[in-house]
Image (cartoon, rainbow, N blue to C red; front, top):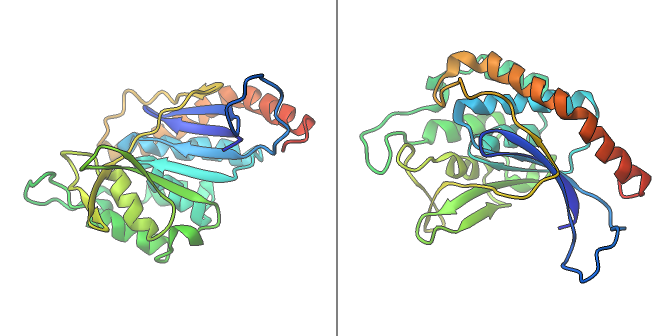
Length: 240
């Protein structure tokens, strides 16, 4: 898929890169329209930093044509794709408690069921299907049986998010269509990396949500000149 991507992955990093539509023998400037994808990666409670990045991108009118999410990134990404703006997500996150999305259970391939997380997403998305979201959204998960990365692009958004958030050994795997799924992963090359400094925030620490959001804002602001340069070049080329 041709496009310019804004990506948050791994330990919360935002990456921008341009993908050619196919392999070519001779490298030439692309004339194809650019697509900007926001790819939100893992981080558990550190994923609140995604909201800070979104606030900066939104306030600077950076266009987003699609959202791809894995783990905590699919959680934040689905809500943004539904139509909540970054400030609404911040307000929602600050009122969120562990008990809203965590349901402990007797350990059996995981000690969190994930039903509460799915219910929370369903409630806030009004039970929307992925294909009904305002911004095209894709959730990444892993097929337990063969270890392959799977992209959910239709069906229940909440169920896909639950599968993408099901960290092996912590959340129970999610059964969809006769297959079992757990947390996915995204690895891609990039031109620009934004990496919020959230190493001091434990993955299960909900008490530092505000700090995570601020770190996301800080990192995005530092990368903003490079992002704007890339956007300007694409517009000059008539691709955006």
